[in-house]
Amino acid sequence: MGILRRGVRDFPVSLEGLKWTALGFMVVDHLASLLFPGEVWPRLPGRVVFPTLLTLMAWHLYRGVDPQKYASRLLPFALLAQGGYALVFGTPWFWPLNVLFTFLSGIWMVQGRVFPGVLLSLMTEFPLGGPALYFLSRGQLFWGAVMVGGSSWFMGWPLWVVFGVSLLVPFLWTVVAHGVPGRRVPWWWAYLFYPLHLWVLEGLKWLGVFSR
Image (tube, rainbow, N blue to C red; front, side, top):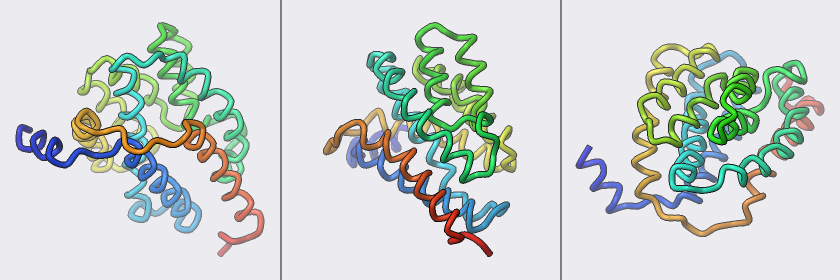
């Protein structure tokens, strides 16, 4: 671990760049789910997306960012995204809820609303993602990693993927802890990107782009 930490200090990662890289992998993952439904390998790069974004948010909470800031930002974009999410992935409109609701559930838990936060998390695509954010925001990496892996297991991923994403969490925590802010863009760009890309994918799906 000492070698890892020294390497991270020597080559600090831009946190803004890390966030947008994760969002890029998210688009690749969603395209893969539409082009290669049911196949594991094309979607493996996307398994880094949720742990990365989760760790970034948890790190800021751990460093003292007011969770209410996240709560007020997440809800409107989560609502905006849900219709596109359901249409793209062919799910009922109100279950599972999209990942922004997962983050919101964790924020509720950080704010002390543990029971409603857990219930909301169980309704989302990452059922244990809310508790994962809660544990990581308190610096409890082991339980955060277990919750991230548990979400992957509930989603039906093979055990080797479950263990892989679990082990990724402490590595990402080290990377983020030694990162630099990077060149910032307005906060709402990333929040809007999520629902916007879903509605674009739904438009392409409606036009038959992904039909075989």
